[in-house]
Length: 396
Image (tube, rainbow, N blue to C red; front, side, top):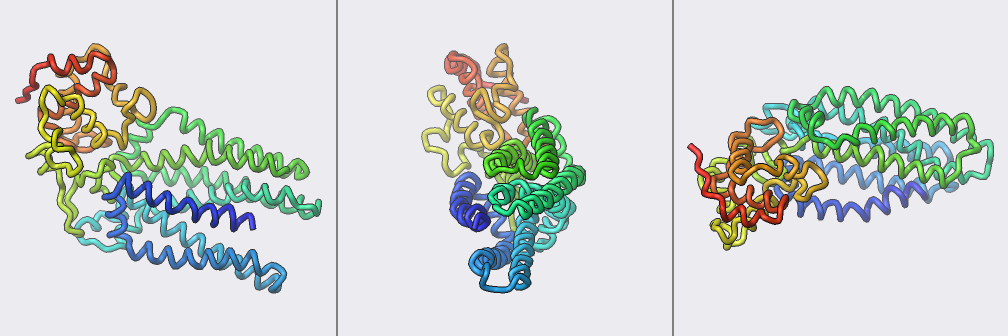
C-alpha cells in the first residue's frame, strides 16, 4: 500500500503539473521531443499501464493468490518499471545529445534514441534507484512487528543499499565519460560549487546509514528512515537532477532547440531550419512572436524595458536575473564597466557562437545596448540615466 500511494497516487498527482510547467517553460522543446519520440512515448504509456495494473494487483491480491503467483506479478511489475526507465532515459539522453550523428540528416527514432550516453545514464540511474529503494523501504520495514522478519529485511535492504550506492558511484564515472565537450565545460565551470559536495555527502551519509542499519537492525525506526529519505532526495537527488538539466544547456532538445526556444541549427531529417539568419537580419525583438509592439523598436524611452525583455527571453533559462541564483548576469560585469563595454562584450560572446556553452544569438547594436542598459540598471540605480547618456554603439 505504501508503494501504491507513495509512487503511483502521489506520482500521478504530480505528473500533470510537471507536463504543464514544462510545456509552459519550453513549448518548442517539448514539441521537438514529442515529434521525435511520439511512438516511444506511446510505448512508455502502454508499459506504464502494466505498472499501474501490476501495483494494484500486488496490493489487493495479497492472501488471495499463492505466494509463487504473487511473486510472478511482482517480477512483471518490476520489469515494466525498468522498461519505463529505459524509455525515459533514452529520451532524456537525446535532449542533451542525439544518439547518433546521422539522425540530423537521415532521421529515425532509433538513431535519436540509442547513443553512448543512453546506457551510461541507465547504468548510473538503476543502482541509485535501488539505493533509494533501500532507504525508502526502511519506512515500511521499521513498522514490522515480527522482530526476526524486521532484522532480516533490514539487513537485506542494507546490503542492497551498500552495493547499489557503490555501483552507482562507479557508473557515474562512466556517465561522465560519455558527456559531450560542452557539457564537460559546464560541469567544471558553471555549476554551483556546493553541488559536488552535496552529492558526496549524500552518498557518504547513505553508506554510513546502511552500515549502521546492518549492524543494528533494531535501531531502524520509521522517523529516522523518513528523515534519511529527505536527506537523500534534497542533498543527493536534487543536485544531481539540477546538474543533469544544466549539462545539456544551451540546448534543450536534440542539439537544435536552445533552452530559450530559439531554433539554433538546421535539421534536414525533420525539415527544421535555423532561425539564426533571420534573427541576424531583422533582430530578436522584431522576430519574437510574444514581444509587445511598443518594444519592437528601441528608443531612449524604452531602452531599459526592452533590455529587460531581452534578458527574460534570451538569458533567463540559464542565468538568474537577480544578484543571486544560477549564474547571475551581473556577476560577469564589475562596477567600473560602461554601457559600451557591456554591449561590446555581449555582442562578442553571442554573435558568433564561438564558446561551447553559450548560444549564438546575434544582437544588433540597439539590442546589445538595451540589454547592457538593463544589466547596469540592476547593478546601480543610475542604470537608466547611464542608458540615456551613452552614445549609440557602432561596430565595424
